[in-house]
Image 1 (tube, helix red, strand yellow):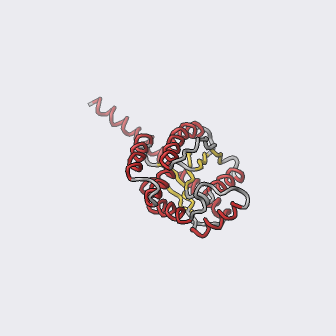
Image 2: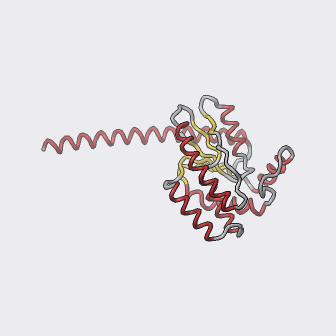
Image 3: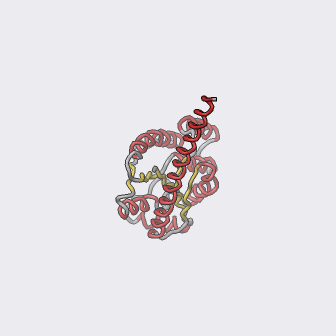
Length: 216
C-alpha cells in the first residue's frame, strides 16, 4: 500500500517516517524523494515541484509492488496547499495560480488515497523548527510563522476535499504517533482485503447471471 505523509514543514513528517521504518522494518519502507533544481521565483518552484511529484508517482508505484507498505514523504497534495497559501499571502498571482491548477488537473486526475496528515499545533511547529535550526540552516521562508499559519490553515480546510482515507494526527508525542499509524494501517489493510473479496464475489455473480442469460 502506498501511504502519503503530508503536512507543513516542521510538523515531524520525516521523523515519523524514519521511526516507522526503523521500528517496523518488516512492514514499512521509505520512498526516496527525487531531487529537483530550485527555481528562483515561486511560480517556477511550484511548477518544478509538480513535475517532480508526477515523476515520483511512477517510482512509488514500482515500490508498491513489493510486500511492504511504502511511506512517501509529501505528495502533489502538499504543493496544492502551499499554492493556496501563496495566493493568500499575495506571493503568487491569481493568473499564476490558475495556470498551476491547470497543470495539476492534467497530471493528477484522481483524489489521493491513504494519507497521513501530521497536524500539530502552531506552537509545536515553532518549537520544533527552532530546535532544528540549532543543527541545520533555516530553509526558505521557514522562519516566517505567518506563512506557516497560512499553509496550516489550507491543509486543515482543504485536505478532506482533496484526499480519501485520511489519518489526522494531532498527537505530538512520537511514540503515540507511530502507534496510531500502525493501527490505522492495519485497519486500512483489512478494509482493502474486504473490498477486494467483495469485488471478486460480485464479479462471480455477474458471470453466473451472464451465463444464465445466455442459456435463456
